[in-house]
Image (cartoon, rainbow, N blue to C red; front, top):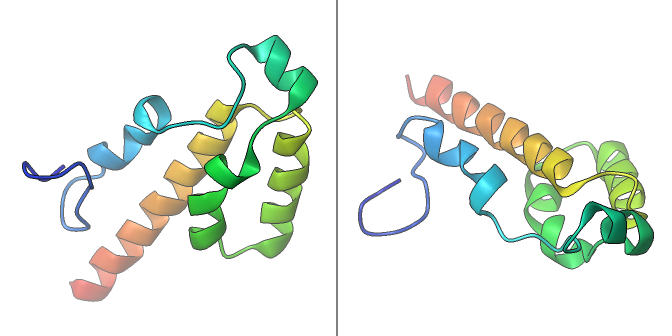
Length: 96
């Protein structure tokens, strides 16, 4: 990440994007048991994935499963990392 801010830059290595899994705020519950029972706050966790994920059917599936507590926060963050990694790679290829 750039020294002056916490946002990863598109020209940097992909390592900062991977920190999403441990550093990004989550709308999930404080325990797996509560998460499975009560689900999550979708407005927090799906916000960025909803912006970058191009597959509306997949996003709907994630919203349903995650909102119901059948999908865990780590799984959603992992998918976001995959989406962002592909976006950065496409950007780099286009600039090359």
